[in-house]
Length: 569
Image 1 (cartoon, rainbow, N blue to C red):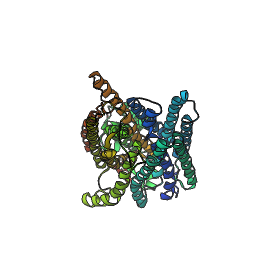
Image 2 (image 1 turned 90 degrees about the vertical axis):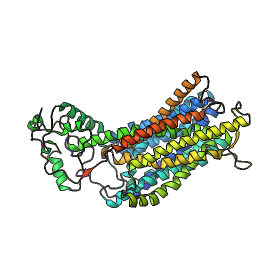
Image 3 (image 1 turned 90 degrees about the horizontal axis):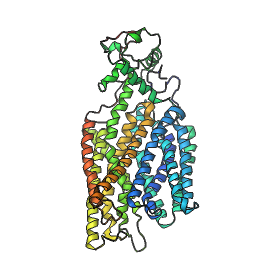
Image 4 (image 1 turned 180 degrees about the vertical axis):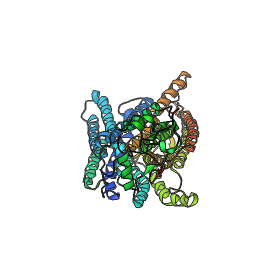
């Protein structure tokens, strides 16, 4: 494949013809297994800090770091799962295996809170969590990509359907998370942790069954081989030819006889256009005297223009990836300190009902449920007419709006926390850490609503960017790269918590102590707001120089096969 294919990250259509199946009829079954996994994830992660502090009696800061650590590992394992899927198993088989592992972890979690002896409970509980992280590693990078693969990019109608698919896919995920936040978290807080986790296990089992029901309708693609080999070949070839220079376009290698003949037979076959960024990699596709005199091409000395441009696609996404990390540092507070904030406020809804603090996340879901259809059906058509862009605004502009909103999110959280502490001081409750402060929990609504709005822009935008701008054979890895932003953001959040704890404790005024009334959680939020503002500036600078993927219908007419000598210095 790396030797002979014109597009080194793609299957050769002549040997692997696209089946006529797929479309929404196939994608809907894939959505079911994703709904089940997201339902289980939000039902577990949404209330995890309360289980760690109330049942396992961990300090708040330690519990927050444990939640962030688990979420971080869960979000980094998809990088491994993507390589396994692309190189060995294919996306369909990876989904089956990883979902089975996920179900096993959820069953073990149920056992850890029920029949496991108390002195082993904490250890088994964390083993279960990290088995779930392994299952998540294979599931997350493949499911959305596998569903998007059901839409044919060569069909204009299916291309439009896929563009809308990302919005509705995320909407379905939000529905699952919202229902889990309302139903499962209530069961965990008011009925039983065992029943709550049992519901999650049952939903995962049902999702796997529904996924298997659609097996005959799927477009399946086998493993394409390790993508890292082709990437390494480009860097190796460029390094070996660092002294060679291109004298004219004919010195560039576009592909071998087989790929050129096949492309001429199929004029719609897409070839990446040549770009001016990362010009040092262009050395890899220049034909020098040794290449010209060789009967066979050495892929570690000579790479096609498509192979080089596909590596450039990956490199362009790295700065975007880095500049979105702070967004997920802010979003990770949703599962930790936002929940603890709510647990110290008046949550009564009538004389006999207390809203579980973790259920406040439902307002994030409700916001997304409202804004995604508005964005897709109202904002996009209006912006399309105004700006002339097919998607209304560019995907990078969409992400940038989300990053800006995340700053407002954490600013709102800081202001509300300052208000909560002032009320505690008025009622002489600063030294009573278990007291419910007489301030309504609805004060937290702005930060939850802004959080949902920022997700609508940034998260959906990142999903689309890392799918569309990655080479076809690296799309599982692209999904994993997007997910890993969540993981590294969680790790970064833990690091910031540790740093803030260390610095503030030395001054004798610990900002993140167990007694939130005496702590300075609002100061911590202001730190996040400042870092997020700096991050937004970096993102804007990065996005300004970003070059989107460009394709050509066919290669330039002046292309020559190996045999034309390039100029040398």
